[in-house]
Amino acid sequence: MFVGYVAFRDAAKPGRRRAFFLLLFSTLLMVVNPRWRRFAEYFPPFAVLFAAFALEPLVRRARERFTAREPAESDGTTNEGAPTGETGATDDARTPAPARVERARAWEFVLVGTAFVMLAAPLVWYARVTSQDIAGMAAPDSYRGGMAWLGDHADRGELIFNTDWDDFPKLFFYNPNFAYVSGLDPTYLLDKDQKLSELYAKLTIGKDLKDDEIANLGPLIRDNFCVGEGEHKRCARYTFSDHEHQDFYNNALDSGWFDEVYHDDDCSILRMRDQKGTPPPDNSPPDEQGDDSDEDDSQGN
Image 1 (cartoon, rainbow, N blue to C red):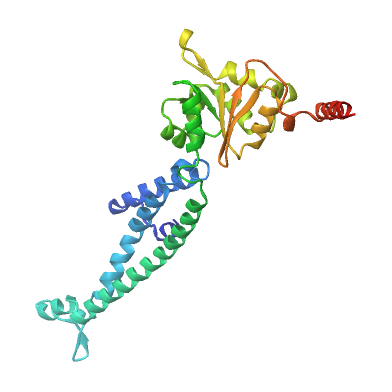
Image 2 (tube, rainbow, N blue to C red):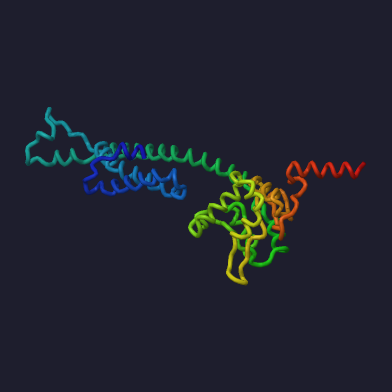
């Protein structure tokens, strides 16, 4: 973009209108790119097109100057001073010498090669970084075990409360017979129901929940996240979470509304109870843990 801005001139000329349009469009993409990531794929090619159209007149003029033959001198006079009728010398002066044309082509090759190397070097680096990122991602079969358990124990068409929308492709791949609360992009849920989307984000992040909201986490999920109508209405009874949502996981178990029914190195599945009960021992409030330990001591005595 910087090269295009420096090289751009004379927007009003007919041949510069395309460059002017690309200047406006690529600048718009550059401005919105930090705010909306979905434009990241569009900005680079249009920025390159803008730079190419902005540089094209400069490259053309440089080529013409470099390949044009210098006026030949004869008897101390140049072709510019030749009589009007003597056009042979003038035509010969306008014809580029083969050697100059070859040198111009050589310089063009050098410049193109240099530009290619300068562009290829970052691409190689980006490819390496991307390969490292892919290597650090979850394995393709990371959720196979959890989805296999759900397939054996949950009813067909069950609504699964998945805590991360970008897990949806794997979940749907392993079992397309379930419905999932959010997937592909969080804006789908936001467009469907803004309040429900905000509640979903609040529950899954789990950092700003009040004590009464944690205590009623089960009903909050069961009463708000449902599909279907009438006798076909199904509300979420299972939650599927990776191990990056520890706040949600702890809040769910602390609430006394959930039991952990599946756990492996990649995911956890919680099933909602019909009634609120006692949290699992590791997730009981400190005062209840103290009461339990006192009872154990008294029984031991």
